[in-house]
Amino acid sequence: MTIKRLIAAVLLASLPACTRNVLVRPDEYLATHSPKRIAVVDDRGQVYQVLHPSIVDGELVGYEIGTPYTVAVPVEYLRGGLIKAIHPVKTGLLVGSAAAVVVAGIVAMMSGGTGAVCAMNFDVSTEGAGARGHCDTSGPDGSSIPDGGSNTLHR
Image 1 (cartoon, rainbow, N blue to C red):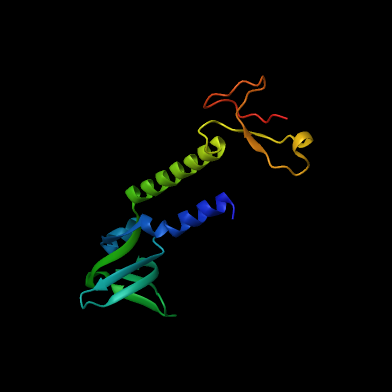
Image 2: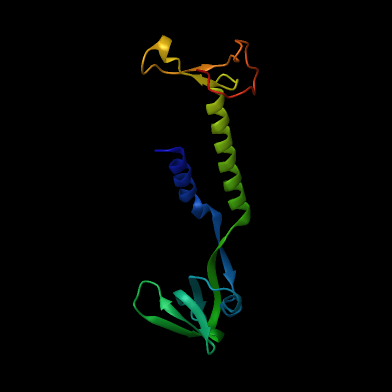
């Protein structure tokens, strides 16, 4: 699994943590937003989960989730609605944490675990074909590269 797929999988798995349930007045909310779904409660306590809701002639209309039927409830009988909304703080923390992990991983890979920036040296003439490279922290003139030095490939 590549690092990109791993990061995408972690972000996708943690996406539900970035949402929150918000109580709304269905008539006011649907006047300015077009949610894919909404859950509403009428004055008798009946819960409706409505797909593609809209307000038409004073009624909340849409498809009742899980059934092939449409639903129409007069707005004056609705007590409230519940929608899923993005939680900006949680989303910011998740994205910031993911970015920090990626940067830390890149720095760790570049330093080769030694703390010094690493240039991979594949000297096939002395190590044989298929030889594994090693972390070369010396400069072109043989001097040691200090931490944060050049990351060039020496041949």
